[in-house]
Every structure is written in C-alpha cells, then in structure tokens.
Image 1 (cartoon, rainbow, N blue to C red):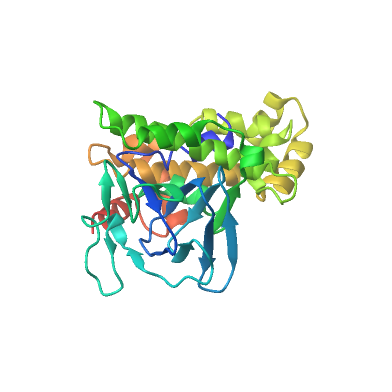
Image 2 (cartoon, rainbow, N blue to C red):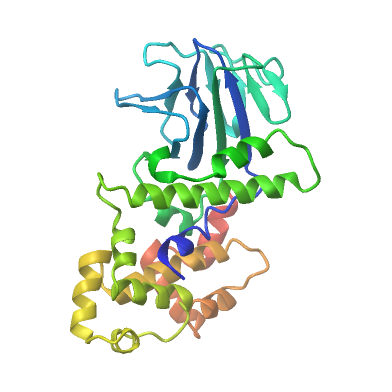
Length: 312
C-alpha cells in the first residue's frame, strides 16, 4: 500500500456534506464551519479565496481547492466583495445576523444559491473525519492546496456536478465515492505540480528504495519489522536504507513505523467493540502491556484513557 492510499484510509467520505452552489455576483461566503477537510471545485466562473491574513488566490473553472481547517476564509466573486453569507458548522447557512438561509436559497436537491442560472457554479464536499490517520495527511498539507485544471485533466468534476442534483437510490454512496476519487486525484495533481515543493511523503513514496519500504510497512504494519529485515526486503544495505529513509521521510524507519502503528491504533480504539489487547495485536503488539506503554509514549495517555476522552 502506498503512502497516499494509507493516509486516505482516514478521511474517507461517509455521508459527506455535498452541495452545488449557483451564484450571480456580487456574492461572498464566509466559511467558518471548522471542517478538517473541504474540497471545492469550480465548474463555472471565478472564485476568489481570501484568508483573514490577506492572502488571496483565484480558482478558475476546472480547478479544485483542498482546504485544511479549521481556520475561516472567504470565497467570493471578487476580493472586494463584502461577506453576505456565513457557513457555520454542520453546513448551516445564515446571514450576518444569524438568520437561517437554508430554505430561502434552496434551488433543488443539494443545490443552493441566489440564482437558478448562476454565472458561478461551485461544488463543495466537506469531510468531518478527524481521526489520527487523517491528521497525518492533514499535517502535510498547506491551508489551501490547489490542483489546476490544466494539470488535473480529470472528468471527475463534471461527473460530480451531474450527480449532486440527482436523488436516485444509493445516491449518497455515489457522491461519497466520487468525492473520495476527486480528493485523491486532486492531491496527486497538487503534489506532482512542477512549480512547487512536493510534501515529504510524495518525495519518499517516489523514491525506488524508500517508496518500496513504505509500501511494505503500510501493507503489513503488524509484521515484526526490523531495519535489517526491511533493508533485506528492498535489496539494499541497512545503512543505505536508514540514511535515505531519514532524508526523505524525516525520521528513522522504526520511528515512522511506530507512529503509523499508533495512529492506526488510535482510530481503532474508537470502535466500542474493540478491546485494547485486540487493537494492540492488529498493529504488532502481542502484549497489551507493551502496546499500552508504546501508545502512552506517543500520545501521553493510555489506550483506555484515549478511548474515554474521545467519548467526551
């Protein structure tokens, strides 16, 4: 399993909030929903993204923006347009005084806006997942990662635009999977852009030695890996693997493996049917005591305390 596939086991859409927005200028939305991850695709028109510190960027038709929360931002037809609508947690739309606009702006199934023939058409999908696996991906992203239409070259934006207003059986599952596919496609396009610095996981995954090692670790995290065994599996010396892994991934192989095991365990512990010992075994610890010690070293609390805190 490659690194991106492993990271995306976390933020997989499950009944995601998906909306098509049709707007005529002037329009400006203040997004303050605190969502950990949001995908915005522009179908028609130009959408300006403006952050509170003054940074601004234009999204053109076919572009996809990946927003890492929870900081607020504006999306507008022009940087000078004042906010008119607030997007609150849970996707609730209100005016500046807090009055709901959900009903007044409804234009059909999963469609909202101020014009049935909007000159600007945006697609929005919001992930609410905030598990430990998700955090590892989010931590590598800027607050806005943009995949430009020219490099994305994907039919997924048009497919999602066509599916959002439909209300057929199983439609939510279709939308969830399309949103996941669009996210993966946009992340790959953004990471591979020629004019930017790719994230560490992308550089590491592309390396013939480190990438192979990462696939082995992610494919079977519970295996009794050692640096020697991992190096033997990828056909290089222990010293070469250790040096290149640390250079590209930013930490030694076994430190990376422990962090990944604990992230998987932290998410699995949220399942009320899972036992601490059972979770420990799925990530490579036969002894519950050894697993609890490793977990506390990473998270500062025991697996049981982590589970209890997540319920509060």
